[in-house]
Length: 459
Image (cartoon, rainbow, N blue to C red; front, side, top):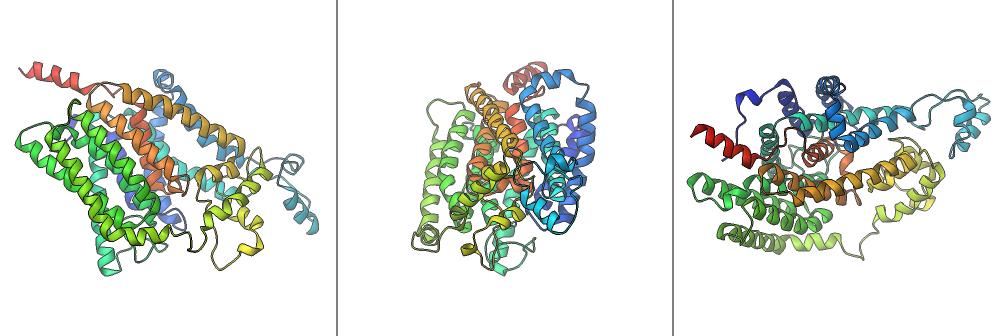
């Protein structure tokens, strides 16, 4: 069954971390136009972040052990702060992409004064504030014990189930949508966007495999209950992905299920797959086929080449051209909307507007320039090294969770090529939690050996 942390594990940091995850899921499901809820989430994260920063600043061992990841974190926080620093007119007017701003001031007979690198300093400041919750989660998840980490995962899986139940009620009643800007008539759960809801479901699969994997090899009553719970969870997620009809969610479901099967196999001890694991794999195949029987038609309609053109693909060249005009420093974090409107071709103008690039890498290239690209490259280097270490590590609960985190991060990174899941606070906080799990920490010990020592003491 599910593990419950011991009472001595519930430190103030652990309690605040759990509260942050709950707040992120309930308050962070939308990416725009919800400043009050986002502010509440940032306020929830602020005390935890202050405590952790004060504690870790004097911990030289922490910075030595997590040198690369900590550098990436600090770099991500520094970019928006640097972009809002006021600069003399002689400097900022000489930056690429500022000629139109300078010309507008001249036409209005206004002498250019001090201004920031960012064309939208208010939005850039908001982007920095939105970074606080994931930063707090990353630092907190590095310092809490393994029992609290497993509890966070169990809490995530419970919220996924609750979110699916809410989504079913949304389809049945046409109500219960938690966000004014949402996908009405679709299953979104606690989220505002069905594609981001699909990302949430996909991220849960490898963690479910890591948590429930051992039940596939044990032969006691508790493991049998856990086995059936895991099968029911996987089936629920797969069916929900079919109902959501997210193209990227459907495309990533197969690799996510395959990777989760491997994680469960390793968590179960490796070797020849046992009967319960084979049954689980077969059940997943049956569920996928069942979902396909009623969902393939609507899904394939979204892939129809004769349908209306894919707006995001048509607009990516425009984003690339705009980004080139603002290099090397970018236009400022959070500035995509006004920048894109200023360069949007007249033939594409209509009643709707392109609020995001639907490609996080392009958007970062536009808003943060070379610094943003450098951080992305550094992150991929860190991710590759940590993932290789996780998949090479031995059999233990900590290693199972690290492997699950590597797959969860990969799913979000792949989805970010065609959408903007990390612009949603729920996904950003979960991404930070996964990064901390993959990074490991002083508390991330091999729990199989710890369990053996504990059993010896009891004996």
